[in-house]
Length: 197
Image 1 (tube, rainbow, N blue to C red):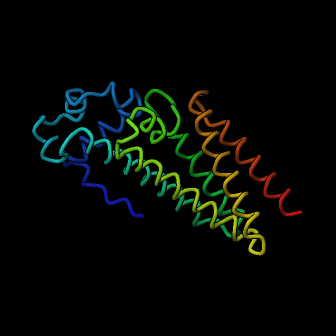
Image 2 (image 1 turned 60 degrees about the horizontal axis):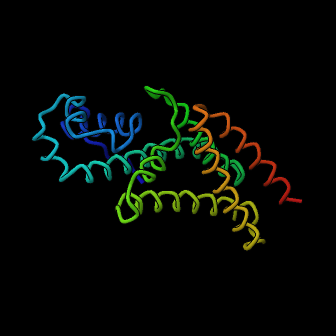
């Protein structure tokens, strides 16, 4: 998964950056087209030249958030030398994302926050679900490498770790800092150690 962002000077890039800030800080519903265009410093027509609708902009925002996380994960993964370290690379990428300098502080997972505002039939909810399933699949792959002879148990542990991670990021968003994610990583380490016995 590569991040093929438009050039920083393009109207599309400016619109996506403005939308990302407003969507994350204020929510999807509270971020209107006029506010996005104003923050981006572009003409309203450029929004519709680059995105069919606000829904298309929301989908681009969700793709960008995930691509940012993937970049952080790949950076962490490049330093991991064991299956357990590869599991921790996922937790560390969540921590890294939580510790970015957000304008109004950390508010949790931008994708989960967005999905909470969308109707059950909105394509954005499916997008977020697929993104979270992809992260759980990465956990599954790395946990399987930790316990190659115990497929069923490893699958269960991967699911536990995915739920632990997602719960921790929701709680971290409520608290406004990453401490819960550090706690989740420590708990994950304890679970992996306990399952190794």
